[in-house]
Image (cartoon, rainbow, N blue to C red):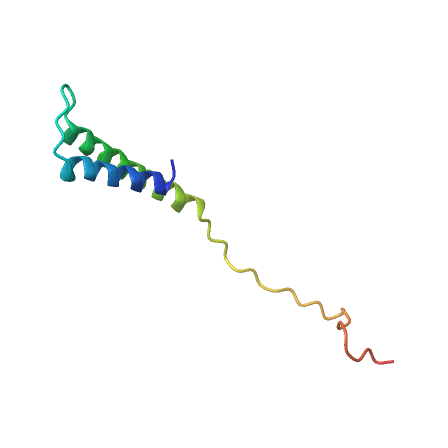
Length: 78
């Protein structure tokens, strides 16, 4: 599940918890909404920690200057 899926879970959970007043027998929609929001937050935390580990910072390398190499293009010294 990507970051978008986690955000959708949080949004659906918030809608179920705060914006609906449906009554279903045997199902507490407020609790289902809270569970969706918690799962979404856990997903965002997991995704961000994995994404942080994937970013590997490579230090810039020192350019190598080869003085024996002929310049490209331009005057060749004929």
